[in-house]
Length: 280
Image (cartoon, rainbow, N blue to C red; front, top):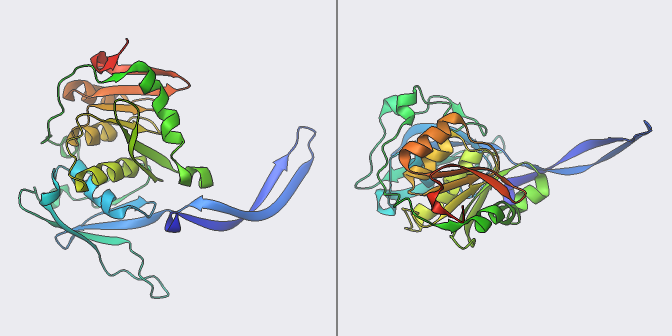
């Protein structure tokens, strides 16, 4: 797990029903969180708080979610830039993306001028108009894609593939699944939007976009930005353990994405385009 986790001394307190108290001192494992500066063609574009690991996937997916690229040939190179800590060691916290032909370079007006936290993926955008990106990939027809019993099993399948969560209890996860429930790719991060960017970035770098035959399962709630990221990657179905927001449901309905919420314990709620789920 390398830099994705770190050990820290803690004081553990347990208070029993009878009021007795047990205090112990030990090491605990925490999920790592560090800033990542994203540069495009040498110019600073954004800073996001993330769990180190799969950083190239994160940046590639971020660029897909910003409407900058849709295919691997539009991303010429990804490289770590010089970044040093107080001891002079490389921090690997700055990445420069060199765009290729066909990419849509972002304007300075759309740049993220504040740090994006691990809780929010669009905090630095200046208006809702800047968030409403134009999709450049097809999403396919609204037709039966996956059985209801497979949808119900996806959260447990995702949970079984989370080693960093097992160690820390402090990260989100996103997974791409086939219609038969087979896991294709999973990524973990302290930011749920980062986890989604990482799986989409993996798919882009593998030349698999659009993901018209796969389902995206996430460990948290379904927000507007996650629906947007799914749509821009050509993913027809997003299913979440938590609740969707009103704006997420509206965007999913308008853009043709099947949105599932409260998917846990063998039950789920289909909020939009239920035609993709067999057996309803």
